Image (cartoon, rainbow, N blue to C red):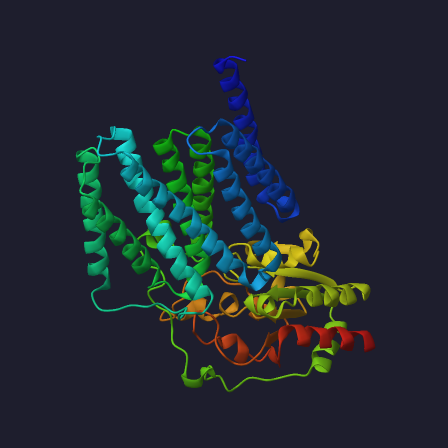
Length: 467
């Protein structure tokens, strides 16, 4: 078989992989078809890896095979062992791994060139992939540490922070221009210094971002990684890598825009780090300072639910922490047996990553038509008998409407306070990830059911059965 025929076959195979990537993204746009989207994208990636493995001549097959096996084992173990509560952290680490790969490839290409001048396209792609990859890698590590609560989830700021960030960014820009203008003939110490500054800027970029903005951060870092990978494709003259990276970058950018809108923050506000500069403050001891709250027992709440006609369940990170999604599905089943209409209110930034609540409820086989987006469910609250809020602190906070000093002021929220009755399941009066009080808890139509979310919902299931 001639080289031209082989090239045509490889091109056709890669076209199939690209088509599967696009179809995968298309199916991922809906919770009902998301699993199929994941499968299609995974098949496309398998085809792409096989094509690359067959074509490559630069590295021995066994080396690439070992890399694929190691990566596959890590991915499989992560998928099986990582809890749903830790999924945002895993996404952050995977984002960082992609960015770090782009950074390493750029570094290897720089040292492998043996001092020969780079062409203009290669020089630009090399420096951009290294810089953007480094930003994504370092920023993702900080996002992971915040999400894992190894460090505080609140904004970390210091005097002159914007000045420091600007100086570091301008230094990186100057080094990048030097690299391109000199066709890559930059002293290694300066090149490594540029990469170090890139990592520092990635850290400084995420430090001032508060926990309430973390879904925006994750989607933004995802887009960074995609762009870095796409640019690396130019560096390696690999069309499939360019297209795959562009798909990730474009989808991540669109998701960032959607998350920004959900937080009522324009994209420019997100990109230039103005978001997350405030984080609120929590009174000493984490009590929340809210004393005028009414608590209820599981039996009281079960009676309320059993005689309702319409119930809306509002899941939040507390549901994820307690892994209560299956218990919530069991409760909904009991209510539906009584002819009660049950729906779920999904806020775009509930949890710690985009779609976090959708993933949890899909795991419990909650029917997708029952999942209502914020704009669809908000008009339903005034005619709802009970709104059952499970750990959703910040996305149900009425302060976002009228307290101008609140760090979440202007953020669209779920209008749970307009329901006839509101039941909030919480461990304590400790504030949410944004670190601010929620006046919803002191409203006359609100009662609190304290305790672990799963234990509380299990108690509600048992109590509803006896009503």
